[in-house]
Image: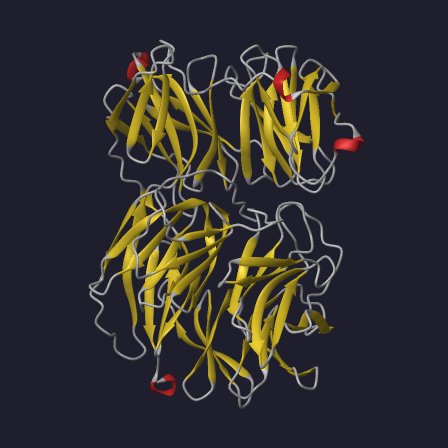
Length: 612
């Protein structure tokens, strides 16, 4: 699973779009390729070229593309991009300065260590310390001058020795948890790993003996991830759910917040001034005088993926970048306009709803937003547009994959629960008052990931999974019938035995509800409360909730391979148009034209006469 974390990224981009002339039937057209600032996920101060002066180093994340590591002169904003030597790697979420003056990074999705040698002016691939791991989340140097990293998905501790070049897999720090998310090295010869997400813990590793064990007392082992860090004094600390701890050797002690030292800063120059990077501006501040000097920083970024698209009430196409979020819009002349930043994650769903474009997002400024497409984007003054909608019990780490307009005119949002949690809910959003009721565990320990309206009912589909790091307690996905008037679940069933996820729920023109579970199409009759047909699908890779009614009652949707059709007379499914580029995201429809995404590219497909 690719994990999306709450980082306050700011990103810009440009999209080159073709003119919006309608394509011929059955024609695919690439409308634009999208490039901008990726997620700024790690920074550090280190030596400049040849070891002279200093530079501020920044690591940008571009999922499915490449890491960009940039060295910036804080005195004038000039920069150098270091080519990525590990072609499999798209990001580096940690960067630390070593005792040798080099910068070291831990990468994803194949968990390499990289070394940036400022003297040689080169980024070097050191290799993969563990063949099982995908992310090196954090890194720190121990008292032995070796580099330690913590990983996902087996919560391991890994090590690199700059003196010998030796890479080591030191094993799991927890027998079942997936995330070792943070690492801290203390001056007393220990390394500490922050563990989660189903049950948080702290793993302590003794450098001298190689022994390790978990030390957080059971009463604190709640859902979450313990963040560990070291202070400038060399003492290691941890935070978890507003509690603070100090570690020494094999012991951990709860302390008052005021007794915890701050983390050792990574943005301080040799002269004591601090560096901050935001957008295309680098700022150096003297903490004594508070005087700040800023310079333009003109790095333009790289290919940046688009995560979801949808039409607004103004009939323009909107979209969301992924890690971080920028709201974008395709204008009538083919120009794609950047509207503004909305957080560090991505929008999982859009919905045209009256005069608004509604959005539901992971790791955003708010979990829900309501954008008035007739007014400019503005968050720096009132009235804000989009309106940011928060609600009691919301979790910024939810994955709101489904959003529909219900028969009562309210918006219904189905989401996978946040990290470590099961039982993701269905949120009922009254957009007139912006009140939100969040209903959890409609199906015990399952998350709601697909929704359809049928007459005066809501049909929901689930997944057995939960947030990252959680462990399912059930084995088969379900569908349910919800009555908005009585606020009661009236019925539930397993539509396809053995399937773990239901997606693409839609009410067809024949009055039946269709859905996909695994590689099986099922047809549900809500009136009779039974599944009336199942058909195998000869392909997979379905894009979640990317299906629509078209033409004379046919259903058309997206898989990774291209466009598929469901014949509602026979319930057969066939791939009718193979996309020239792998489909990664959707979904928007206008007339007989379908719009979708392939990585950083926006595409359209004009339907056959059958779909006119």
